[in-house]
Amino acid sequence: PINIQWRDSVYDPHLKPLKIHYDPTTCLYIWNNGYSFQVEFDDSADKSVIMGGPLENHYRLKQFHFHWGAINEWGSEHMVDSKVYPAELHLVHWNPVTSTSFEEAIMENNGLVVIGVFLKLGAHHAGLQKLVDALPAVKHKDTIVEFDVFDPSCLMPSCPDYWTYDGSLTTPPLTESVTWIIKKTPIEVDQNQLEEFRMLLFTSAGEEEKRMVDNFRPLQPLMNRTVRSSFR
Ligand SMILES: Cc1cc(=S)c(O)co1
Ligand SMILES: [Zn+2]
Image 1 (cartoon, rainbow, N blue to C red):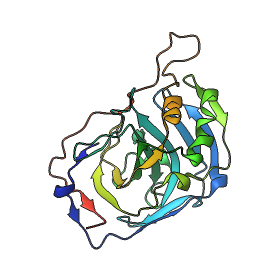
Image 2 (image 1 turned 180 degrees about the horizontal axis):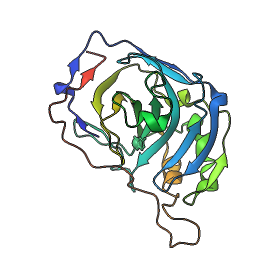
Image 3 (image 1 turned 30 degrees about the vertical axis):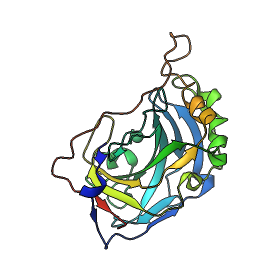
């Protein structure tokens, strides 16, 4: 993740609007992978896909997860002009044109697209609450709960503006295979919803409990990369 300096980003008039078509019935389950809680999707067909934006072709939704802090002062992976948010949603997609599976796409250039959405403290988020209500069932690492019919579009801000840059995964294998699309406008969630995230555990049942908080990676230097914006 990087600190997006608004003034260093370059408006690219060729960037198209991002097109998102998620099929709620492709939602499979939620699980605690010991790093975040993750909602997995059936990616065996082009049912939940994104296209447009900076993308050459369509990409399939595989999973989404969040990164958050122990307190509201930090938690997001990206920053905007050094402003951090209490949490960040990542929707992970892979390229079915150049790869036959997500696992293969991870190792490919342009294999993955991750849409990042900032969460800020504010109004209750009704769409998120369905997810939050399921979290007690995945409190411990390697627990899983069925979670069907959920449309992650409800977690998208209505504002179409985004930044985009080519980067890497934020966790091993850290391959430089990711096109990042970071939405400019955060979504609002309330204090109780953030606190439910912080009730999850990194640890398995029976182990000494470690709260799942601060599961974000530190900023990386931008190096010679350019951040493009879809808006002036
Ligand atoms: C594949 C993948 C992507 C992200 S962004 C993450 O945090 C973990 O795994
Ligand atoms: Zn992530």
